Amino acid sequence: MQDWPATITDMISVETHFGRTGVKCFSDRPEDLNTMVQQAVARNPEGEALVCDGLRLTYRQLDDQVAGVAASLVGLGLTKGDRIALLLANGPEFLIALLASLRIGAIAVPINVREQTPELKHILNDCGAALLVHDAAIAERLPADADLPALQRRLSVGGSVAGSEAFETLAGSTAAFAPVLVDEEETAVILYTSGTTGQPKGAMLTHLNIIHSAMHFELCMELGARERSLLAVPASHVTGLVATLFTMLRTAGCSVIMRSFKADDFLALAAREKVTQTLMVPAMYNLFLLRCKVADYDLSHWRIGGYGGAPMAESTIHELSQKLPSLILVNAYGSTELTSPATILPLGFGAERSDSVGIAVPCCEIRIVDAQGQDVEPDEPGEIWIKGPMVVPGYWNNATKTAQEFQDGYWKSGDIGSRDAQGFVRLHDRSKDMIIRGGYNIYSAEVENALTAHASVIECAAVGQPDPILGEKLHVFVHSSDPKLDAEIVKVYCAAHLADYKIPDFVTFSADPLPRNANGKIIKKTLRDMV
Image 1 (cartoon, rainbow, N blue to C red):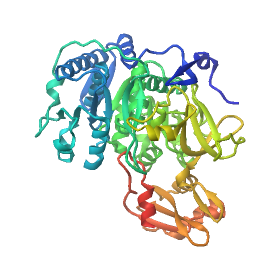
Image 2: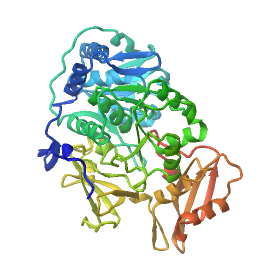
Image 3: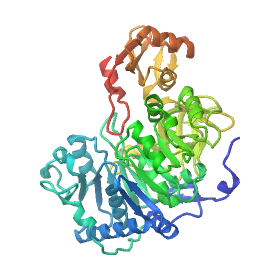
Image 4: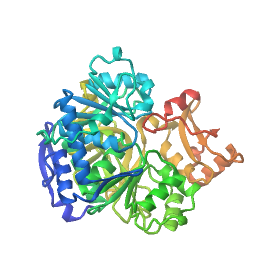
């Protein structure tokens, strides 16, 4: 059985949290996120904490700015427990406003800037946001004041706009402000899930949750002092928020913030800033391999290349190992409800176990269960249930969904996976995305992973198409810029890599990217509606 080193597992004790007994926790951990930040400031006061465009902030400078904004927030009447919504793209203001909110004991509610007016109205009302900090450029998309009865004030980053004061006025304060005392089980952040099957739900990420996830990334990726991580995914998503921002705060490292991802800009920035660690989706790695000459950039400092969502195509792993031999690829599996991650592939297993999302992180317990909630045998597929200190206590203002998705301390992921005798977990599919063709189960992720390895496929998605005889047939949507790629080529390629019943019955091509929600996930409901 593969396990983490004793130096890590010896740090674990069993505790009770959120009414859940038998929770494995790190015994030596910061008391709360404010304490974790103060520890980083003390360890590395003159080291860089944040880099974005031409701005560079040391930990001492970041701490001063956070204190000033925190004092200004209290001056506006904000207090412990208030919800402060952050509708901000990647930038220094996001991190400053986030930490200032935590410093006064408030709850930060990061929101993806791609959300539209109806979703914004739902989220802001559901969490009862008292303050909204938003980018000036998206002011026209904001709901009207009459539609947000709980909202007391709006602050705009990038100058004042109608109905919003300039955030920069707060950021200019030099007042000191000591962190408000909070309990580690109190909610620090509310993150709204993508809402592909209904209204978004607000997962309550506590101080305890975030600290454990940051420590899992630190320990399992063997991160040392003063790492430099490049934030290329949205800071408002659990990956950017926890895997980069909070993990760098845990290690007293530097967050190099990229406002939006472009392949060539990414490589240039990673080289210039001597980036050591990243965590992105596999498509981002594919893009810079496809569009850039990697050898043109000095990426010798880049040591850890984390990725999540699904196993990376073997062709991508091979190409990365050829072009970046010093880069260690690390798969991680998680979700918003898990404060990400639940599994991480131990270092050095990237090529050997490319089919796996890794083993359970040190404080995590995983069950693979059948439809009756009974544990299945090794290598047998079932639903993944997850327990640990990183599992959120539930959804904000939604006791019904909390009762449905959490049981006996476990979060019922809805993901179909299996675990082998060595403890390595394979992720097959979302339960609702599994296709049943003539009685055979087809995991859409398996088809997508195989097809993505084709040189002409930028991205793809597999869905079921109703069929009166077989129940469902397999329909694949392919985003490609190659006019020579046709359905026959796709079917022949799949036949060489998959079982015959997994060969697509239908193929639809698109020169444009596939439809995605605000968090960047492909919206399969839209594709199903199309077929």
